[in-house]
Length: 69
Image 1 (cartoon, rainbow, N blue to C red):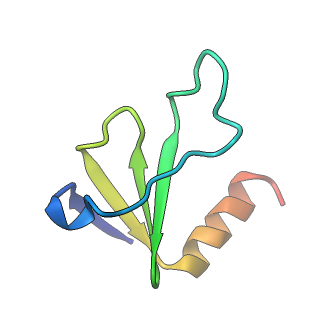
Image 2: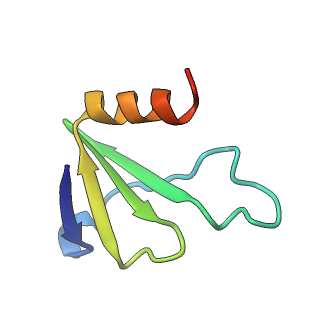
């Protein structure tokens, strides 16, 4: 995992949230952006804050674990 602050080199990333993030608390989630070999993750409430970077396999493992699959 890589942790780094938001900077100009990540401005071009196309961020998106899960389709499950609708409703009154819809802004309380994470956003992801993918680039070749890295899945970037950030807090949707603090878009200028830290960004975590995961290898695609590590992200897939986390999503499977978090969803109980």
